[in-house]
Length: 118
Image 1 (spheres, rainbow, N blue to C red):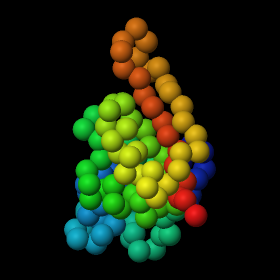
Image 2 (image 1 turned 180 degrees about the horizontal axis):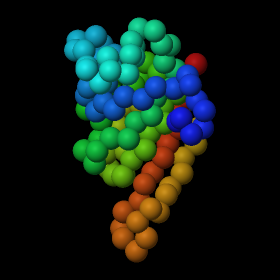
Image 3 (image 1 turned 120 degrees about the vertical axis):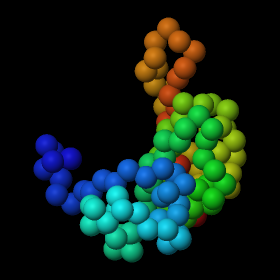
Image 4 (image 1 turned 90 degrees about the vertical axis):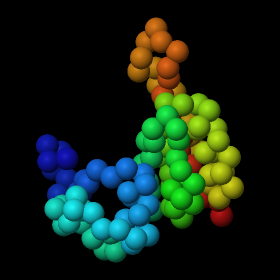
């Protein structure tokens, strides 16, 4: 971020569950305070999701549906499909891509861009 001279970007690592708790205001996080990030100061319209193989939990799926755009990256096509069944109730898929980051293995990364339905 600094190398690209982006002074208006701040990063704090949170798991999906922690992000959900922070956005709902049910828990505060030292990592956000250390970066001087107050979530109420932002209007979030896009979210990047890269969950573990187990996929996204139900509370986080409900939160994701509030965003205008969702960029979902997945290493598990089965949980991706299950999560997309929920997300496609409020969003539509506009782009998708596959990335073979592990040649000669059965693993593949999937990327899906979803946009809120009107």
